[in-house]
Length: 164
Image (cartoon, rainbow, N blue to C red; front, side, top):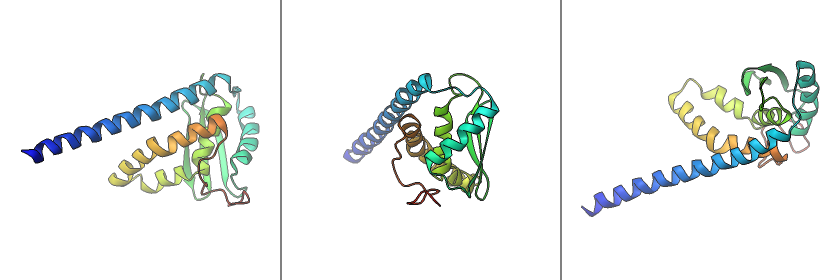
């Protein structure tokens, strides 16, 4: 009987912790991300996106031998195409068509987040583990970087001198 009560208490505690963690991380995303999207310079066309890409990839410290192409599309995302090659799509619509969104996606590239998703997308446990890692680690890091420019840890595609 005592063991059942303890197990029930443990399950409730873990669930409460998970919910609290999601609320806190969601709050960080909403406060930092939304506030910065409002003031971040907008990207009106492909030419502007490409000129910002050159500047922002250097700011993120992505090595020159890493190919990064960027396009305007329906949603913002980054993905690995092949070894040392990535594609970023930036949403064409407000409020996500801005420099903040570009910085956010470049952080995912520089941080190796796209590599993790690419390497494990065909495995159930890989997808599940990467979803948790993405939502609780990668996404908050990218939001903080895009809003503040602060890199929370060493990034795999960036060496100590800015080269891979």
